[in-house]
Image (cartoon, rainbow, N blue to C red; front, top):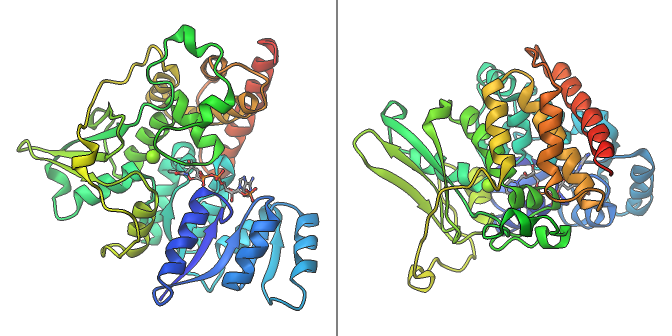
Length: 387
Ligand code: NDP
Ligand code: MG
Protein backbone atom coordinates (compact mmCIF):
# COMPACT_ATOMS: atom_id res chain seq x y z
CA UNK A 1 0.00 0.00 0.00
CA UNK A 2 1.43 3.41 -1.01
CA UNK A 3 1.07 6.08 1.67
CA UNK A 4 0.48 9.42 0.08
CA UNK A 5 0.76 13.11 0.93
CA UNK A 6 -0.90 15.58 -1.44
CA UNK A 7 0.46 19.13 -1.53
CA UNK A 8 -2.30 21.21 -3.13
CA UNK A 9 -5.15 18.77 -2.45
CA UNK A 10 -7.90 21.36 -3.09
CA UNK A 11 -6.69 22.20 -6.61
CA UNK A 12 -7.44 20.67 -9.98
CA UNK A 13 -4.60 18.11 -9.80
CA UNK A 14 -5.18 17.51 -6.08
CA UNK A 15 -8.86 16.69 -6.67
CA UNK A 16 -8.12 14.38 -9.56
CA UNK A 17 -5.46 12.60 -7.48
CA UNK A 18 -8.00 12.00 -4.72
CA UNK A 19 -10.37 10.53 -7.33
CA UNK A 20 -7.70 8.03 -8.39
CA UNK A 21 -6.98 7.13 -4.77
CA UNK A 22 -10.67 6.71 -3.95
CA UNK A 23 -11.11 4.38 -6.92
CA UNK A 24 -8.22 2.19 -5.70
CA UNK A 25 -8.65 1.91 -1.93
CA UNK A 26 -6.57 -1.25 -1.58
CA UNK A 27 -3.57 0.36 -3.27
CA UNK A 28 -3.28 3.87 -1.86
CA UNK A 29 -3.90 5.59 1.43
CA UNK A 30 -3.95 9.34 2.04
CA UNK A 31 -1.83 10.26 5.06
CA UNK A 32 -1.54 14.04 4.71
CA UNK A 33 -3.19 16.89 2.78
CA UNK A 34 -2.03 20.47 2.24
CA UNK A 35 -4.18 23.27 0.83
CA UNK A 36 -3.96 27.04 0.59
CA UNK A 37 -7.14 28.80 1.72
CA UNK A 38 -10.04 26.57 0.71
CA UNK A 39 -10.88 25.14 4.14
CA UNK A 40 -14.44 24.17 3.10
CA UNK A 41 -13.15 21.68 0.56
CA UNK A 42 -10.26 20.61 2.78
CA UNK A 43 -12.76 19.90 5.59
CA UNK A 44 -14.68 17.55 3.28
CA UNK A 45 -11.47 15.85 2.17
CA UNK A 46 -10.40 15.33 5.79
CA UNK A 47 -13.79 13.85 6.68
CA UNK A 48 -13.56 11.45 3.74
CA UNK A 49 -9.92 10.37 4.00
CA UNK A 50 -9.13 10.95 7.74
CA UNK A 51 -5.45 11.76 7.15
CA UNK A 52 -2.89 11.89 9.96
CA UNK A 53 -2.26 15.60 9.30
CA UNK A 54 -3.34 18.52 7.13
CA UNK A 55 -1.95 22.01 6.56
CA UNK A 56 -3.34 25.38 5.44
CA UNK A 57 -1.67 28.66 4.60
CA UNK A 58 -2.62 30.70 7.71
CA UNK A 59 -3.02 30.23 11.47
CA UNK A 60 -6.55 31.68 11.60
CA UNK A 61 -7.71 29.24 8.91
CA UNK A 62 -6.12 26.39 10.85
CA UNK A 63 -8.02 27.47 14.01
CA UNK A 64 -11.32 27.60 12.13
CA UNK A 65 -10.68 24.15 10.65
CA UNK A 66 -9.75 22.64 14.05
CA UNK A 67 -13.00 23.97 15.52
CA UNK A 68 -15.07 22.41 12.78
CA UNK A 69 -13.28 19.08 13.06
CA UNK A 70 -13.59 18.81 16.85
CA UNK A 71 -15.16 15.47 17.73
CA UNK A 72 -15.17 14.31 14.07
CA UNK A 73 -11.52 13.72 13.29
CA UNK A 74 -8.12 13.22 14.92
CA UNK A 75 -6.29 14.90 12.02
CA UNK A 76 -3.55 17.21 13.25
CA UNK A 77 -3.81 20.67 11.63
CA UNK A 78 -0.63 22.61 10.78
CA UNK A 79 -0.21 26.00 9.15
CA UNK A 80 2.15 28.38 7.35
CA UNK A 81 5.41 27.64 5.59
CA UNK A 82 6.74 25.68 8.58
CA UNK A 83 3.57 23.62 8.63
CA UNK A 84 3.88 22.84 4.90
CA UNK A 85 7.51 21.78 5.31
CA UNK A 86 6.67 19.51 8.28
CA UNK A 87 3.75 18.01 6.40
CA UNK A 88 5.87 17.38 3.29
CA UNK A 89 8.35 15.40 5.40
CA UNK A 90 5.81 13.52 7.56
CA UNK A 91 7.09 10.07 8.63
CA UNK A 92 3.94 8.15 7.69
CA UNK A 93 4.17 8.97 3.95
CA UNK A 94 6.36 7.33 1.32
CA UNK A 95 5.10 9.34 -1.69
CA UNK A 96 4.39 13.06 -2.09
CA UNK A 97 2.23 14.53 -4.84
CA UNK A 98 3.61 17.99 -5.57
CA UNK A 99 0.56 19.92 -6.84
CA UNK A 100 0.65 23.35 -5.24
CA UNK A 101 0.55 25.97 -7.99
CA UNK A 102 3.45 28.31 -8.67
CA UNK A 103 6.64 29.07 -6.77
CA UNK A 104 4.97 28.27 -3.42
CA UNK A 105 5.37 24.61 -4.36
CA UNK A 106 9.17 24.71 -4.41
CA UNK A 107 10.14 24.58 -0.73
CA UNK A 108 7.63 21.89 0.35
CA UNK A 109 8.73 19.75 -2.62
CA UNK A 110 12.38 20.28 -1.71
CA UNK A 111 11.65 19.31 1.91
CA UNK A 112 9.83 16.16 0.75
CA UNK A 113 12.87 15.10 -1.29
CA UNK A 114 15.19 15.91 1.61
CA UNK A 115 13.08 13.58 3.75
CA UNK A 116 13.54 10.83 1.15
CA UNK A 117 9.97 10.73 -0.20
CA UNK A 118 9.26 9.57 -3.73
CA UNK A 119 7.82 12.47 -5.73
CA UNK A 120 5.00 12.61 -8.26
CA UNK A 121 5.54 16.04 -9.74
CA UNK A 122 2.85 18.34 -11.13
CA UNK A 123 4.43 21.60 -9.93
CA UNK A 124 6.63 22.38 -12.94
CA UNK A 125 7.71 25.68 -11.38
CA UNK A 126 9.88 23.64 -8.98
CA UNK A 127 11.94 22.38 -11.94
CA UNK A 128 12.01 25.73 -13.69
CA UNK A 129 13.32 27.52 -10.63
CA UNK A 130 15.68 24.93 -9.21
CA UNK A 131 16.03 22.01 -11.63
CA UNK A 132 19.71 21.39 -10.98
CA UNK A 133 19.40 21.54 -7.19
CA UNK A 134 16.30 19.33 -7.17
CA UNK A 135 17.74 16.67 -9.49
CA UNK A 136 21.06 16.59 -7.59
CA UNK A 137 19.23 16.14 -4.29
CA UNK A 138 16.94 13.44 -5.70
CA UNK A 139 19.98 11.56 -7.01
CA UNK A 140 21.76 11.85 -3.69
CA UNK A 141 18.66 10.58 -1.85
CA UNK A 142 18.11 7.92 -4.51
CA UNK A 143 14.42 8.76 -4.92
CA UNK A 144 12.35 8.88 -8.12
CA UNK A 145 10.69 12.04 -9.45
CA UNK A 146 7.84 10.80 -11.62
CA UNK A 147 6.08 13.28 -13.91
CA UNK A 148 2.37 14.13 -13.68
CA UNK A 149 2.47 16.81 -16.38
CA UNK A 150 0.85 15.05 -19.37
CA UNK A 151 3.67 15.81 -21.83
CA UNK A 152 6.32 14.53 -19.44
CA UNK A 153 4.27 11.49 -18.58
CA UNK A 154 4.08 10.81 -22.34
CA UNK A 155 7.85 11.14 -22.71
CA UNK A 156 8.43 8.98 -19.63
CA UNK A 157 6.11 6.31 -21.06
CA UNK A 158 7.78 6.52 -24.48
CA UNK A 159 11.17 5.94 -22.82
CA UNK A 160 10.13 2.69 -21.09
CA UNK A 161 11.97 -0.29 -22.55
CA UNK A 162 14.28 1.90 -24.65
CA UNK A 163 17.89 2.91 -24.05
CA UNK A 164 18.33 6.54 -23.10
CA UNK A 165 21.58 6.61 -25.14
CA UNK A 166 19.58 5.82 -28.30
CA UNK A 167 17.35 8.86 -27.91
CA UNK A 168 17.69 11.54 -30.58
CA UNK A 169 15.16 14.12 -29.41
CA UNK A 170 11.84 14.58 -27.65
CA UNK A 171 8.90 16.38 -29.23
CA UNK A 172 6.68 18.17 -26.76
CA UNK A 173 3.20 18.74 -28.10
CA UNK A 174 1.20 21.89 -27.30
CA UNK A 175 -2.49 22.53 -27.84
CA UNK A 176 -1.74 26.12 -28.83
CA UNK A 177 -4.25 27.39 -26.26
CA UNK A 178 -7.42 29.41 -26.80
CA UNK A 179 -5.71 32.14 -28.85
CA UNK A 180 -3.89 29.94 -31.34
CA UNK A 181 -5.54 31.59 -34.30
CA UNK A 182 -5.65 35.20 -33.06
CA UNK A 183 -3.45 37.90 -34.56
CA UNK A 184 -1.42 40.12 -32.22
CA UNK A 185 -3.94 42.84 -32.87
CA UNK A 186 -6.81 40.57 -31.82
CA UNK A 187 -4.90 39.51 -28.69
CA UNK A 188 -4.67 43.11 -27.45
CA UNK A 189 -8.04 43.13 -25.76
CA UNK A 190 -8.60 39.53 -24.69
CA UNK A 191 -9.97 39.22 -21.15
CA UNK A 192 -9.05 36.82 -18.32
CA UNK A 193 -12.39 35.02 -18.85
CA UNK A 194 -11.47 34.38 -22.51
CA UNK A 195 -7.98 33.23 -21.57
CA UNK A 196 -9.30 30.88 -18.87
CA UNK A 197 -11.42 28.97 -21.45
CA UNK A 198 -9.00 26.32 -22.58
CA UNK A 199 -10.20 24.32 -25.61
CA UNK A 200 -9.11 20.87 -24.30
CA UNK A 201 -8.04 20.92 -20.64
CA UNK A 202 -9.76 21.94 -17.41
CA UNK A 203 -7.03 23.35 -15.15
CA UNK A 204 -6.24 25.85 -12.39
CA UNK A 205 -6.21 29.58 -13.17
CA UNK A 206 -2.47 30.22 -13.32
CA UNK A 207 -1.64 27.33 -15.66
CA UNK A 208 -4.63 28.23 -17.85
CA UNK A 209 -3.21 31.70 -18.46
CA UNK A 210 0.24 30.15 -19.06
CA UNK A 211 -1.39 27.94 -21.68
CA UNK A 212 -2.92 30.96 -23.39
CA UNK A 213 0.45 32.77 -23.56
CA UNK A 214 2.33 29.51 -24.37
CA UNK A 215 4.54 30.22 -21.34
CA UNK A 216 3.32 26.83 -20.15
CA UNK A 217 5.22 25.18 -23.02
CA UNK A 218 8.32 27.20 -22.17
CA UNK A 219 8.10 26.02 -18.55
CA UNK A 220 7.62 22.46 -19.80
CA UNK A 221 10.73 22.60 -22.00
CA UNK A 222 12.75 23.49 -18.90
CA UNK A 223 10.96 20.81 -16.88
CA UNK A 224 11.78 18.21 -19.57
CA UNK A 225 15.39 19.28 -19.72
CA UNK A 226 15.93 18.52 -16.05
CA UNK A 227 13.62 15.54 -15.61
CA UNK A 228 15.13 13.63 -18.53
CA UNK A 229 18.64 15.13 -18.51
CA UNK A 230 18.40 16.47 -22.08
CA UNK A 231 20.30 19.11 -24.00
CA UNK A 232 18.18 22.02 -25.20
CA UNK A 233 18.81 21.05 -28.84
CA UNK A 234 17.15 17.69 -28.08
CA UNK A 235 13.79 19.29 -27.24
CA UNK A 236 11.35 20.36 -29.96
CA UNK A 237 7.86 21.80 -29.70
CA UNK A 238 4.98 20.98 -32.03
CA UNK A 239 1.54 22.56 -31.83
CA UNK A 240 -1.11 19.81 -31.98
CA UNK A 241 -4.53 21.36 -31.36
CA UNK A 242 -6.39 18.08 -30.79
CA UNK A 243 -4.29 17.23 -27.67
CA UNK A 244 -4.43 13.49 -28.41
CA UNK A 245 -0.69 12.83 -28.80
CA UNK A 246 0.68 14.01 -25.46
CA UNK A 247 4.34 13.99 -26.62
CA UNK A 248 6.84 11.81 -28.49
CA UNK A 249 10.38 10.50 -28.37
CA UNK A 250 12.45 10.05 -31.51
CA UNK A 251 15.28 7.47 -31.56
CA UNK A 252 18.47 7.26 -33.63
CA UNK A 253 17.02 4.77 -36.11
CA UNK A 254 14.10 7.05 -37.02
CA UNK A 255 11.52 5.38 -34.76
CA UNK A 256 9.16 7.84 -33.10
CA UNK A 257 7.33 6.53 -30.03
CA UNK A 258 4.27 8.51 -28.96
CA UNK A 259 1.77 8.27 -26.12
CA UNK A 260 -1.86 8.98 -26.98
CA UNK A 261 -5.01 9.36 -24.92
CA UNK A 262 -8.02 11.56 -24.36
CA UNK A 263 -6.98 14.84 -22.70
CA UNK A 264 -7.69 14.04 -19.05
CA UNK A 265 -5.16 14.33 -16.22
CA UNK A 266 -6.52 11.16 -14.60
CA UNK A 267 -4.28 9.10 -16.93
CA UNK A 268 -0.90 10.73 -16.14
CA UNK A 269 -1.80 10.99 -12.44
CA UNK A 270 -2.67 7.27 -12.36
CA UNK A 271 0.58 6.35 -14.08
CA UNK A 272 2.69 8.45 -11.70
CA UNK A 273 1.05 6.54 -8.83
CA UNK A 274 1.06 3.04 -10.32
CA UNK A 275 4.27 3.00 -12.41
CA UNK A 276 5.50 0.63 -13.76
CA UNK A 277 1.96 -0.75 -13.93
CA UNK A 278 -1.06 0.74 -15.71
CA UNK A 279 -4.17 0.62 -13.50
CA UNK A 280 -7.82 0.72 -14.50
CA UNK A 281 -9.62 4.08 -14.75
CA UNK A 282 -13.22 4.83 -15.71
CA UNK A 283 -12.26 7.22 -18.52
CA UNK A 284 -14.05 6.85 -21.86
CA UNK A 285 -11.84 5.13 -24.47
CA UNK A 286 -9.96 7.12 -27.09
CA UNK A 287 -11.90 6.77 -30.34
CA UNK A 288 -9.59 7.94 -33.09
CA UNK A 289 -12.32 7.33 -35.66
CA UNK A 290 -14.30 10.08 -33.93
CA UNK A 291 -11.29 12.40 -33.62
CA UNK A 292 -10.77 11.89 -37.36
CA UNK A 293 -7.70 14.03 -37.97
CA UNK A 294 -4.58 14.80 -35.98
CA UNK A 295 -2.96 18.04 -37.12
CA UNK A 296 0.34 19.74 -36.38
CA UNK A 297 1.96 23.12 -36.86
CA UNK A 298 5.05 25.01 -35.73
CA UNK A 299 4.67 27.30 -32.69
CA UNK A 300 4.75 31.01 -33.55
CA UNK A 301 7.25 32.71 -31.24
CA UNK A 302 6.47 36.09 -32.76
CA UNK A 303 2.88 36.08 -31.53
CA UNK A 304 3.65 34.07 -28.39
CA UNK A 305 6.64 35.92 -27.00
CA UNK A 306 6.43 34.21 -23.61
CA UNK A 307 7.68 31.02 -25.22
CA UNK A 308 10.70 32.81 -26.70
CA UNK A 309 11.41 34.44 -23.33
CA UNK A 310 11.39 31.10 -21.52
CA UNK A 311 13.91 29.72 -24.03
CA UNK A 312 16.04 32.83 -23.61
CA UNK A 313 15.99 32.31 -19.85
CA UNK A 314 17.33 28.77 -20.23
CA UNK A 315 20.10 30.03 -22.48
CA UNK A 316 21.14 32.60 -19.87
CA UNK A 317 20.94 29.89 -17.20
CA UNK A 318 21.90 30.32 -13.53
CA UNK A 319 19.26 32.42 -11.72
CA UNK A 320 17.51 33.59 -14.93
CA UNK A 321 14.84 30.85 -15.16
CA UNK A 322 13.79 31.55 -11.55
CA UNK A 323 13.60 35.28 -12.36
CA UNK A 324 11.60 34.60 -15.53
CA UNK A 325 9.24 32.39 -13.53
CA UNK A 326 8.75 34.95 -10.74
CA UNK A 327 8.09 37.75 -13.23
CA UNK A 328 5.62 35.56 -15.09
CA UNK A 329 3.72 34.65 -11.94
CA UNK A 330 3.47 38.30 -10.97
CA UNK A 331 2.33 39.34 -14.44
CA UNK A 332 -0.24 36.52 -14.63
CA UNK A 333 -1.63 37.56 -11.23
CA UNK A 334 -1.93 41.18 -12.41
CA UNK A 335 -3.67 40.08 -15.61
CA UNK A 336 -6.14 37.93 -13.66
CA UNK A 337 -6.85 40.99 -11.47
CA UNK A 338 -7.55 43.03 -14.61
CA UNK A 339 -4.66 45.37 -13.86
CA UNK A 340 -2.68 44.73 -17.04
CA UNK A 341 -3.47 43.66 -20.59
CA UNK A 342 -2.72 40.21 -21.98
CA UNK A 343 0.15 41.40 -24.18
CA UNK A 344 1.73 43.20 -21.26
CA UNK A 345 2.51 39.83 -19.66
CA UNK A 346 5.54 39.19 -21.93
CA UNK A 347 6.48 42.85 -21.78
CA UNK A 348 6.80 42.74 -17.98
CA UNK A 349 8.73 39.46 -18.08
CA UNK A 350 11.14 40.81 -20.68
CA UNK A 351 11.81 44.01 -18.77
CA UNK A 352 12.43 42.07 -15.58
CA UNK A 353 14.80 39.68 -17.33
CA UNK A 354 16.65 42.61 -18.95
CA UNK A 355 17.21 44.14 -15.51
CA UNK A 356 18.64 40.92 -14.07
CA UNK A 357 22.32 40.00 -13.83
CA UNK A 358 22.27 36.21 -13.53
CA UNK A 359 24.22 34.66 -10.67
CA UNK A 360 24.93 31.06 -9.73
CA UNK A 361 22.35 30.16 -7.05
CA UNK A 362 24.10 27.97 -4.49
CA UNK A 363 20.95 26.73 -2.78
CA UNK A 364 17.19 27.03 -2.38
CA UNK A 365 17.48 30.27 -0.37
CA UNK A 366 19.34 31.95 -3.24
CA UNK A 367 16.64 30.76 -5.64
CA UNK A 368 13.91 32.21 -3.41
CA UNK A 369 15.83 35.51 -3.27
CA UNK A 370 15.96 35.66 -7.07
CA UNK A 371 12.22 34.93 -7.12
CA UNK A 372 11.46 37.72 -4.63
CA UNK A 373 13.69 40.14 -6.53
CA UNK A 374 11.90 39.33 -9.79
CA UNK A 375 8.47 39.87 -8.25
CA UNK A 376 9.53 43.30 -6.94
CA UNK A 377 10.91 44.40 -10.31
CA UNK A 378 7.92 42.99 -12.22
CA UNK A 379 5.50 44.91 -9.95
CA UNK A 380 7.42 48.13 -10.60
CA UNK A 381 7.51 47.54 -14.34
CA UNK A 382 3.76 46.87 -14.30
CA UNK A 383 3.13 50.16 -12.51
CA UNK A 384 5.30 51.90 -15.08
CA UNK A 385 3.04 50.39 -17.75
CA UNK A 386 0.00 51.81 -15.99
CA UNK A 387 -1.13 48.94 -13.74
P1 NDP B 1 -5.05 24.96 -8.88
O1 NDP B 1 -5.00 26.43 -8.90
O2 NDP B 1 -6.28 24.26 -9.31
O3 NDP B 1 -4.68 24.42 -7.42
C1 NDP B 1 -3.58 24.91 -6.71
C2 NDP B 1 -3.46 24.24 -5.37
O4 NDP B 1 -2.36 24.82 -4.67
C3 NDP B 1 -4.69 24.44 -4.48
O5 NDP B 1 -4.80 23.34 -3.62
C4 NDP B 1 -4.30 25.69 -3.70
O6 NDP B 1 -4.97 25.80 -2.45
C5 NDP B 1 -2.84 25.42 -3.46
N1 NDP B 1 -2.05 26.63 -3.24
C6 NDP B 1 -1.96 27.72 -4.04
N2 NDP B 1 -1.14 28.63 -3.51
C7 NDP B 1 -0.68 28.10 -2.35
C8 NDP B 1 0.20 28.55 -1.34
N3 NDP B 1 0.79 29.75 -1.42
N4 NDP B 1 0.44 27.75 -0.29
C9 NDP B 1 -0.15 26.54 -0.21
N5 NDP B 1 -1.01 26.06 -1.11
C10 NDP B 1 -1.26 26.84 -2.17
O7 NDP B 1 -3.79 24.47 -9.76
P2 NDP B 1 -3.62 23.14 -10.61
O8 NDP B 1 -4.06 21.96 -9.81
O9 NDP B 1 -4.16 23.35 -11.97
O10 NDP B 1 -2.03 23.11 -10.78
C11 NDP B 1 -1.16 22.71 -9.73
C12 NDP B 1 0.24 22.52 -10.30
O11 NDP B 1 0.19 21.46 -11.24
C13 NDP B 1 0.78 23.74 -11.06
O12 NDP B 1 2.15 23.87 -10.84
C14 NDP B 1 0.51 23.41 -12.52
O13 NDP B 1 1.41 23.99 -13.39
C15 NDP B 1 0.67 21.90 -12.50
N6 NDP B 1 -0.06 21.20 -13.56
C16 NDP B 1 -1.42 21.26 -13.61
C17 NDP B 1 -2.12 20.64 -14.62
C18 NDP B 1 -3.63 20.66 -14.68
O14 NDP B 1 -4.21 20.03 -15.55
N7 NDP B 1 -4.32 21.33 -13.79
C19 NDP B 1 -1.41 19.91 -15.70
C20 NDP B 1 0.00 19.86 -15.52
C21 NDP B 1 0.65 20.50 -14.49
P3 NDP B 1 -6.40 26.59 -2.22
O15 NDP B 1 -7.17 26.45 -3.48
O16 NDP B 1 -6.94 25.83 -1.05
O17 NDP B 1 -6.06 27.99 -1.89
MG1 MG C 1 1.39 19.94 -19.58
